[in-house]
Image (cartoon, rainbow, N blue to C red; front, side, top):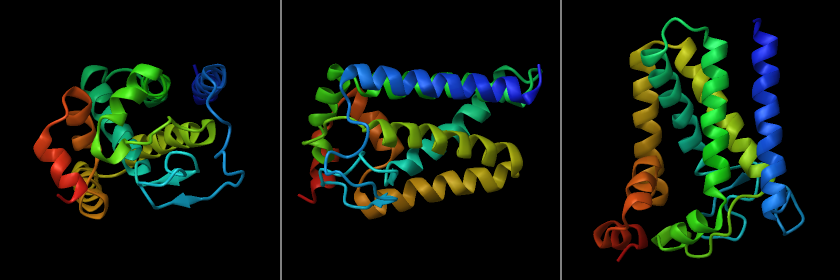
Length: 185
């Protein structure tokens, strides 16, 4: 199959993502009625509602990790087939992340007390960020990609006291020490 077929498949997966989130009752855009390119305040009602936010960087890292894992386990399939697989994984996560169970679990974390899930626009943007990370990993040297991922993790941790690593840890179990650090206590 050529790259167009895989890209159409990835687009179809993202369309399913949008439809499922719509059926879940997630808003298309921020309920504030505007669309921002960037929402930089983590503890605002606009977080996870606009095109990008601090968590966009985590989705770029998703793409980097998906590329690395899929390339390791499926080295003989085309990059386009791996992109389709990565998109499927990201879409599955975006849907799971917006279920009541996961939303309520996130609310137990220090930085997500008022979290209501993603807007459809933000969720689709997260999937696009994953694709961006996937192609960064495909195009650049391994050391550059690792350095970028580490930089993003450390920078975001410094700026907002959260990142992909802390998100995964807190998703598994909320530790009091991490929560205290995240709230500045």
